[in-house]
Length: 135
Image (cartoon, rainbow, N blue to C red):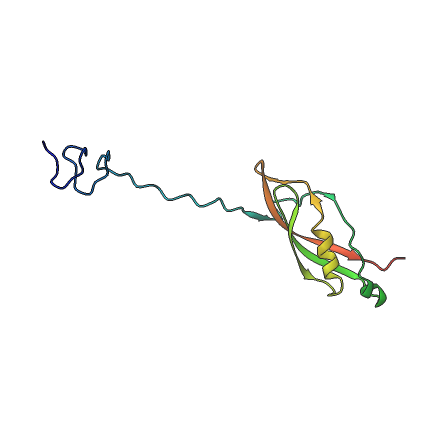
């Protein structure tokens, strides 16, 4: 009969005790899942031209800054995704009264997608927001 003492009725001939019904006795390990591709952000510089801006929003001049006659520029580090949307912005320098308005404006700006070797990529670059008290 060839079964295993204590085995399961109807089990595989020459099976093993504690085996799986219909199992072949061989197992192939399941490969671990591949980690998701890390999106690379390329810094605009000598080898990569800055993308062309297609939409701009002028910052709203803060009331307190206007009342105290504060003007100047805010330099912002902007991260632009592969679709041309600004997805991150942080102030590098500028007057504290002007920074929130500058960041709010920059986050609404749009750019042409940046291509690297024919593939759209996310880029990081510095932009300058000007605040002038009018003429």
